Length: 200
DNA sequence: AAATTCTGCAACCGCCAGGGC
DNA sequence: TGCCCTGGCGGTTGCAGAATT
Image (cartoon, rainbow, N blue to C red; front, side, top):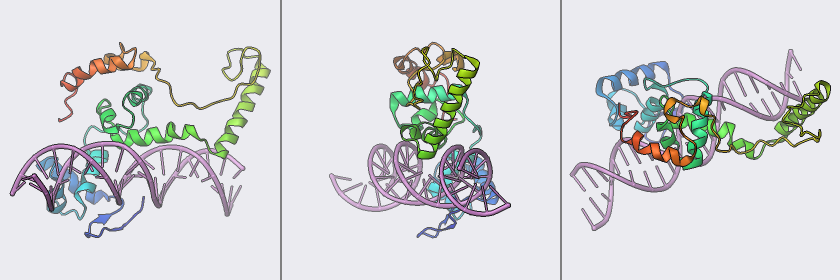
């Protein structure tokens, strides 16, 4: 993170300071978004336009949610990713208050890594498997998903998430969704400005 | 308690598309 | 019509703190 330095153009690089945040916020609230290169020049920030835009979009913009994604949001991400792939900005439009960067990071850390768990994770996994099995044996827990009814050990596989979204977690508008095509169906509604006006 | 490894996330980079001249 | 500039997007990097050994 601390990548303090200067670009070839002399722009400051690295983490933003609270003073810079204040300057950018004040400037954008006064003059609005857009024209990022002029924001960079006029606001007194010695930052590139790209950097200003990124900072604003991902961190300073009002209405941004911080913290962990909710199960609803997670479900939406999974569903939409299955539909569109790595179209993070598109997916982000369906999650008000979340940024494409945040969603992208979330996906990478939670799902992408599932493909090839590292050795240590594997060890941890095996350990918890063992514990699960022992618990199952001790308690005689028959509902344990780690074991089949015959008591055979089943491999714990972190799989790429399937497109199954528990409707109870979804916002009202999504609760009728049963498949990806339903999302397409509501797409027109969304894009027609029916629900969110993302320009605001 | 120290060293090592993992996780989360802010920020940068490079590419591409669109608009203006 | 072609060039340049700018904004937007997806991919990647690297650090801090947490968790584990």
